[in-house]
Amino acid sequence: MKASTNVLSSLSTKEQLRLLLAQDKRKTERVDIPVFLSYRESLETAFSPKTQIEDISGGGLRFSDSRKLKKHAVLYVQLYLSPQTPPLAIEGEVIWCTKIPAKNKQKYLYNKGIMFHKMNCQDRREFVSFLSNQILSSYLENQSVLLKQLSSAQASKRSTP
Image (cartoon, rainbow, N blue to C red; front, top):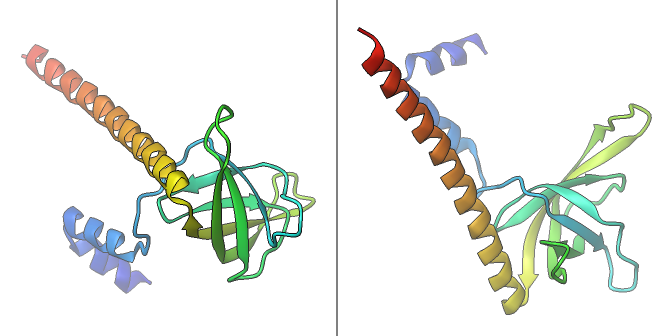
């Protein structure tokens, strides 16, 4: 462990960043936005109560609830992008399911990663448009903050004798 820390510290910041990014196996950027889902494991069962997701990407999402799901289980998901629009219908697969302590310390929750497999064309278009707008808004917001900080730093530099 200490040897790997020494190796990392000997690398430039750019090289360290490249290493970290290479370790992330995701193919698309994940964003944290207020989106809800409900799901069921078969077409014959009822949908679960709505649950807020933790993050989402073009290829899947992550959420937690009280149900333990088997790895590779097929899920039929209703994704609610906003209260004003009908949910999107998605077929996905449980990629992982991990037991985590709940906030009340009395129960456990299961954190799950879901990979998207099937979505009709109209829902896919709506989803891609929604996600693109969210990522763009987040990027522009971050750029705005950075520009303000840069502008402030340059202003203070000019006022320093």
